[in-house]
Image (tube, rainbow, N blue to C red; front, top):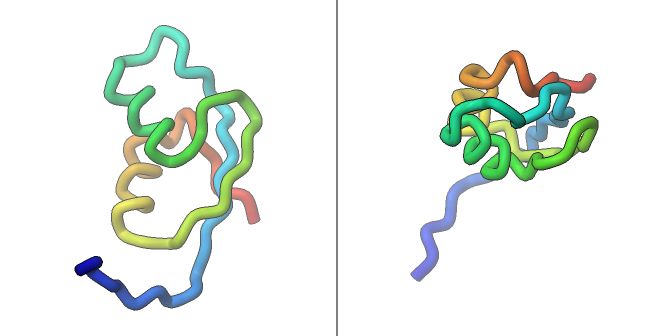
Length: 66
């Protein structure tokens, strides 16, 4: 059975502002995990602790859009 989590409905919108070229492989993998892979791409994700933690590790590559 699938594990169902309660979703609060809060979302966060991210924009990629940094290139993954010449970055460590783990940072490129984190960008792909967020759904980002091209410059200036914008995605909307659920506002969870996991997403916030990933954003905290990539402050030079992603920007939170209001």
